[in-house]
Amino acid sequence: MTLTAAGEELFASISEPFQAIGLAVEGLNRFRAEPAGRIRLNVLEEASTLLLAPVLPIFFKRYPAVELEVSVSNRMVDIVGEGFDAGIRWGGTVPDDMIARRLSADVRWVVVGSPKYLEKTGIPKVPEDLLSHQGVRIRLGNGGRYDWELEGKGREIALDVPGPITIDNTQFTLQLVSRGGGLAYLPEPTVIPYVQRGELVRVLDDWAPLGPGLHMYYSGRHQVPTGLRLLIDIIRELQPLGL
Image 1 (cartoon, rainbow, N blue to C red):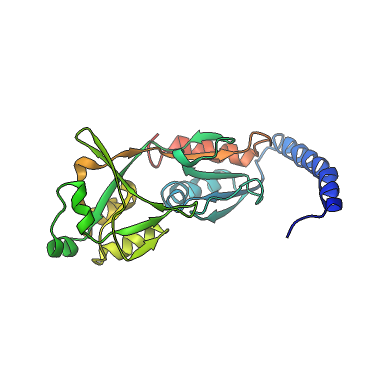
Image 2: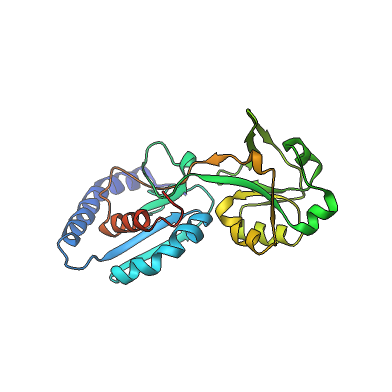
């Protein structure tokens, strides 16, 4: 469904005044003794569990008048067009026309499997061994399927690891592989609790590459809400994933 020519003209004529009203309200917020307002975020699943969950209890204790709405989705969306104030993505996937603020250190990506699965199939020694294993395949936010990228011993290799299931959800993947459902390729912070409990084992550790950390991004054409600036500051202060 699209706007007619008349609708486009009406939208163009009223959007600027409404944007000006929003900027004026945000300007008033800076004079409040207590920050207030509502923020809408679109974030990756890993950003919700690894960054926001540890930080938000402290954030709301400091700024109880700020409201936050979070949409958790690995699908790439137009944050401006869909009414979000900001998004959180891995550094390499932030749109070029956005302002980005780093929220975490770079993150290792590791291959893991359950002891039960590895006892049955054997432990892969080199990346090419993965082609004879069952992998949980990764669906990207842009709809494509991700090749596992490994790096070590002066080589970089990307493999389309075979497997009967493709997933775009990390927690689902962790539950599946911890029950013997194959191997998975995941950000290291997500697997640490499972490794510590003995439910998962890292393999090919010498081939685990370092990928860009998580970044908050937003449009440079709009004024940054006070609450969003404060949220960025507290994440960078507490550094749940390092910085």
